[in-house]
Picture 1 (spheres, rainbow, N blue to C red):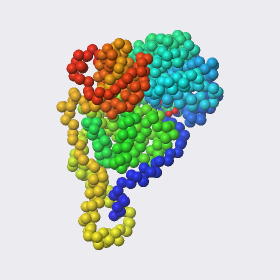
Picture 2: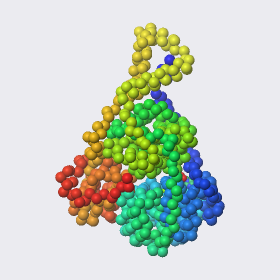
Picture 3: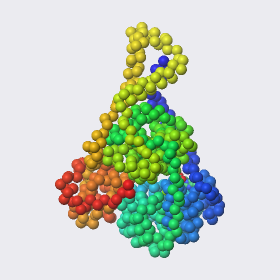
Picture 4: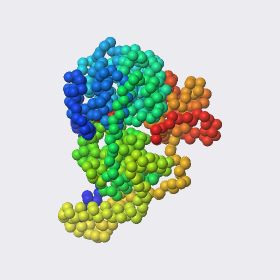
Length: 579
Ligand code: ADP
Ligand code: MG
């Protein structure tokens, strides 16, 4: 029996991952019925050369449909799923239609909801423009030092990719002007509205030239989007791609009711219990990805994290390792996982339930391909229970709420694991007789050796049963751990809740729905934010202008007082989340 077989070889494995090689772009598969060629889309040579180099073989459906409309100069509403290739659908025609280096006055503006998407779009556009001379594309987004951005902007730009709040800031300071801008794209419009950006968007559009082509892309078309479209678009062409019906019939969907603090333990148990190969775990924030990955590595799991703050090369390299099954456990955010061509997952775990139901479908669609049985597991907090019925409705399949693994389950599981290890060890046929007799000389008989080694394994697996959540009791008072920040801006400065929500969401990469109560007094405002992000948010927001003013922000640490809450009830009008 080999000792090594019992021990987890974390360190050795982790060391071998320090070096990363870069790789080509990872591309998703498209399953369009009618195939077209990029050559048939009237795009210029330079663009064709760039997309070919990027590995695009044929245009996706939305590209096939949208590119001709955009090139005709018409306004457009495009509705299609995430990952369908919308960036090229608007990016290629925009590049074709601009006149590069024309006085360096901005000719096209692309609005995106978050910093990550902004960077992603600008990056992709630069790749498309690789063979065009002198195209300058800049991105401006909240959370970055505004002075540095102003310096960056000074050189002029042909195309600006921006988040709405920061863009407005620059427009007010007149550091960005759009007199010559005749192409405007609103990317992920629904997400922007979810983040509370409606006012900002309207204000931006009020200052744009009325002679322009406007294009709006959105995965969903709720009423507020259509209303916005009525205001900013003229006789738009509508393109709606059929939502590809996901065949989730081969995916078994389970859910576990847990508190946030219990999720990591449960995840470890499920990974051990299910003994599956490729598993993708989704979290909603970059921070969570990093924290969870660190926790799993510490427990000896060979996992890797993937999120938008990592360099593309690093991401590509991690994906390559995952695809080649050198790593079996990938922790990712939705944004980072987009456009990643891996769909033969054995199991997808929603460590955090996604904010948008659409992401759920997208996430779990990565398992159960090619008729194989896939598994999707979601961790649900007591206050998220209602989401389960929504999921059942959307997927037209039931989601089974499973009991947490019990002490007995875990014992059986541990025994299985150990039996497995022992059998693997025996199969190695390593001669250990000498060691056994030497140990025996030192007073350790076979029983000691077995108990000693087994105890070590049991201890290292740390499979302690999780206390089930008392569902009813915690139903109304959710376990959200929030901390209160004080901003020295209030009613006197014209501050409304939407300004705070959109500024924080935009700059700190969190969703509006993660922000708790907001109270606005004359000269200051109180905002509840997730406690694990309080320091990060304070640091960023102390540099981020809100309605043109950089606030002073501090942490009170306490939740907003009940008394204050009641007396200020009128101000708690957060924008509705689409959930
Ligand atoms: P969306 O904006 O619709 O969510 P993206 O534009 O971000 O989608 O595209 C998703 C991924 O697909 C990106 O990695 C992109 O490079 C890739 N992609 C886009 N169009 C094509 C194509 N025609 N062929 C291959 N890959 C493509
Ligand atoms: Mg996109």
